[in-house]
Image 1 (cartoon, helix red, strand yellow):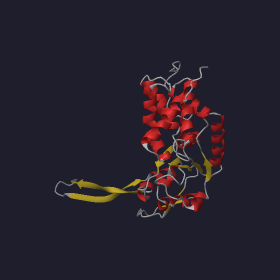
Image 2 (cartoon, rainbow, N blue to C red; image 1 turned 60 degrees about the horizontal axis):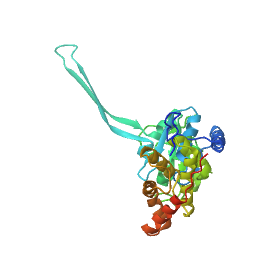
Image 3 (tube, rainbow, N blue to C red; image 1 turned 90 degrees about the horizontal axis):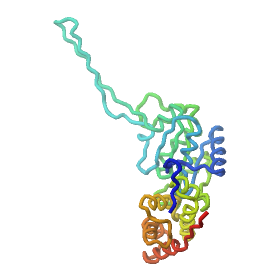
Image 4 (tube, one colour; image 1 turned 180 degrees about the vertical axis):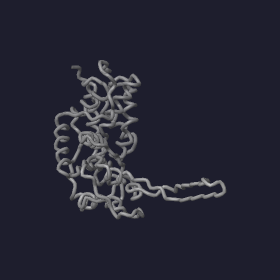
Length: 303
């Protein structure tokens, strides 16, 4: 195993921008500048969130990140009264006269969506289809009328106007993923939806090499092995994250990138067996054989 040692340790969350990624970001930025929200959809581990955050950074505006989940509601997005504050004033200017005034008011805290809308942030709504469609209805008014309704807030204004610099980027998994709600057509109709799929093994090897600090020949062997496993699956096979985990842990545990090595095979089994079991729907022994065969077929071509 050969580790690149001539530069600092990479940020594993950073997006590696090859020519295709740069072109996609350029297109997406133009859509946002024209006032259209962008929606990246694709399988888990394809890099949608990293892409969305990289795009948001290009706008040079503060970024607000929201993760979709089935419990997200209007109070989380708009805000809520969080308690009470009391104010007490004691007046003894005249020694013989004692005055005390006390007032109690409710304390309001803005939700993340309201904060982003008011201040013109770039909102990244990650895996938004994991939130209930009724919650996401708020975005229909934002994208169509340019207002955020303040449902159930008890505020004096029924809505707030969207800051002209506000923009939103959505990400989601395909509809067949567990825990995903079907999005209302009215919302999808207002988004520019771009499919983000797994990259080919060579481009994935570049990412693994850069982020894990591994030479290309060994990074290529790992991503090719993961690609072979993915070919056995009709959906949801091992993602780029699996390649990153294998490369990173092999380096940290001083395990050679060698498909014949028992420790390396064990590492690959630990990282990919669960995903492959769900994909193949076979017994554990059969799944492990598929993984071991993929490891043994690995070839590290020295450059």
